Picture 1 (tube, one colour):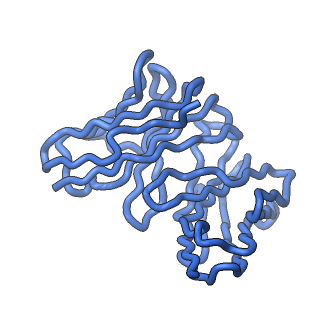
Picture 2 (cartoon, each protein chain N blue to C red):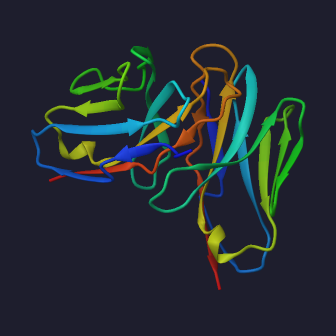
Length: 113
Length: 115
């Protein structure tokens, strides 16, 4: 069964600090992995996408890594800002079938001033 | 290019009533996905539609729930005889094609409250 597990479930950090969110998956055959940011009361917005051959992708202060061998990904946020407070969702897609991705439950990040 | 539109943003229904949730995909997108999100839970896939066709409804309850995406007009998620357990945020996403690499763009969601 395809599964995506994220840790930690929630995280509180001070503004300006860095943090790293983790994602482990068992989706197969692997196609791609996306990290989404979901602000409270809004729909998710894609931050990065990585395919099998990519092991790092940056989007401003967000850097995602992928280890396809261990089936792990991380999202690193540098110099956090108050606006980074949100839920971060790891989403993994498989090839074939109806292309319905598998969603993690998300990590809730709170950045305090 | 407007993003994915959903309406209403908030919907309150009493038990036993019907709820109709609408989703207008991004311009040029013909693939629509519906998801349900309970408080403190992740997004759960419900149904995947292409114009006039249901491609995958494996996540949608067999009873009381139905979805359509007509040739003209928005996609509709319909919940008949709502119960308190239907209270959730319902998100619609659209994509330009079917490939697994294709990004899904999400709407702002409809928050359904069943009294």
